[in-house]
Length: 174
Image 1 (tube, rainbow, N blue to C red):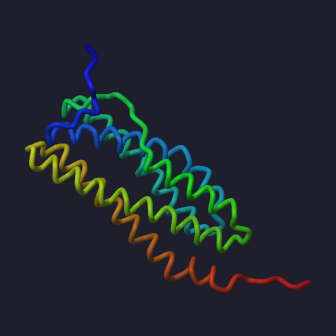
Image 2: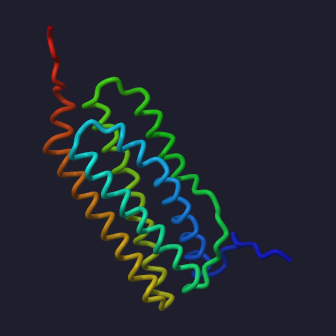
Image 3: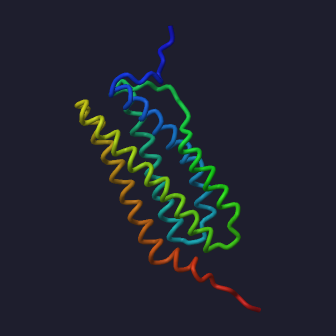
């Protein structure tokens, strides 16, 4: 009989489910980040998004290591929340006709994804701590901390450049 990997009856099952969701969500995000980097106009935004993509790749590698250490199943499941964030971002970007506005839209959308990830990594870390899974808790804490650092960089960039440029885009007259 096949095991039902979505049957959540224990805290370990919940952690298992969440980690599978995180992993597929990170893979979904990784697939679109390169295109988003190419759509960014600001060099600083491109740089932060590239660093973010590098950290997403590291998160994927570390999470795949959970499968052996924590008895986490490797069955892939979709992450509808991440897909909704991606779809919403694509829709908004397709409706932006100004480069400065597009940068503001992209930054805001990535930051929304980032905030979602901060909360989910934090909750999973708490579950891992409760279950005595210190190594997994440490890796989740590192991911959460990394997400907070990216959030800080994005906030600074928004306040000191992107939002200012979006407020008053340069209009060239001929």
